[in-house]
Image 1 (cartoon, helix red, strand yellow):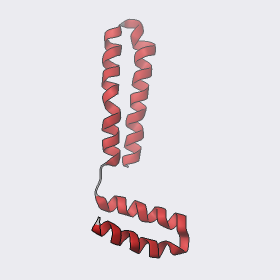
Image 2 (tube, rainbow, N blue to C red):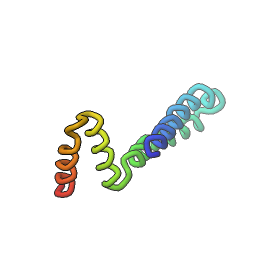
Image 3 (cartoon, rainbow, N blue to C red):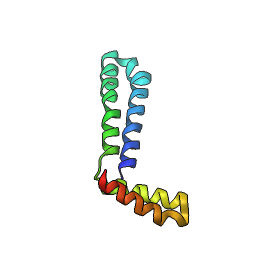
Image 4 (cartoon, rainbow, N blue to C red):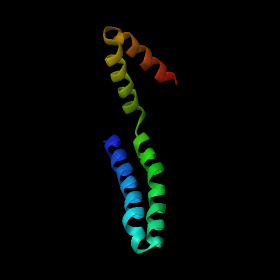
Length: 88
């Protein structure tokens, strides 16, 4: 969900800048600059949203990646990761 929202926000940012300087600029430069200024604020917000979440969701993502990458040895690595993240 967070990844989807990130890509939506970044898409809105790119489309805003493109429309501001290809279409809106032809009618007035001031709104084009205003749209670009709003688009400038969107990427940091998108990154904050994409990185938001509790620690358990990040831990689950790490375990899934370990299982995919290492197969049978994933159980041992999973136990190590859980122990390391419990202390860190």
